[in-house]
Image (cartoon, rainbow, N blue to C red; front, side):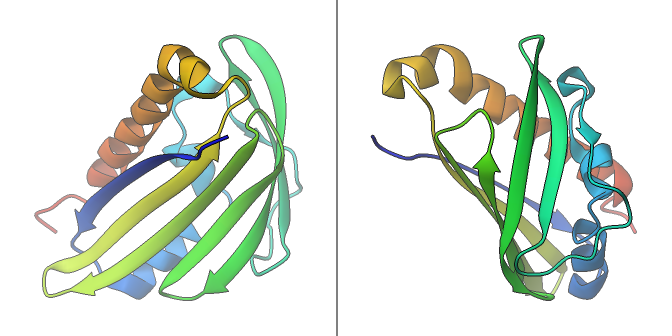
Amino acid sequence: MPDFRVQSSVLLRHPRQDIFDFFSRAETLNILTPPWLHFYILTPLPIEMGVGTVITYRIRLRGIPVRWVSQITEWEPPIRFEDTQVHGPYSRWVHRHIFEETAEGTLAIDDVAYRVPGGRLVNRMFVAGEVRRIFEYRRARLLELFPLGT
C-alpha cells in the first residue's frame, strides 16, 4: 500500500530555538489541533519529550472517538523531531517536524507520510481533504500565535 504525503510550511519571525521549544511541549497540540477533532491528551502532563516518549490522546474522527498513541522516534533539538503513530486510525502515520533557520526567522515544516485502510479510494474520498484541512488550520493558528510583524 502506498504512502500518501502532506507537507505544510510557515515562516515564523522568531528564533528557531523559541519555535522548537513551543512545538516540543505536548500541550501545544491542544492549541494547534482543530476544535472539530475534540482533541484531548490522556497522558499526564507535563510530558518529558525525547526519543521513546509515548503520548496517548483521544480525538473524534467523523464523530467517532478514537484513541491515538504516538511515540517520539527522532529528537534533534532545535532542528527537528518525529512522531510515529503506534496505535490509531491510520495504517501508518509518521510526522516529521523540521525547523529551518532563515534570515527572516524560522521556517516550520510539517512533513507527514501516512497510509489508510482502503488505500487510494478511501484516501481520496474521506481522508486527504480532512488531513489538508487540519494542516491549514494549524498553519493559520501558528500565524495568529506568531504574527509576521513581530
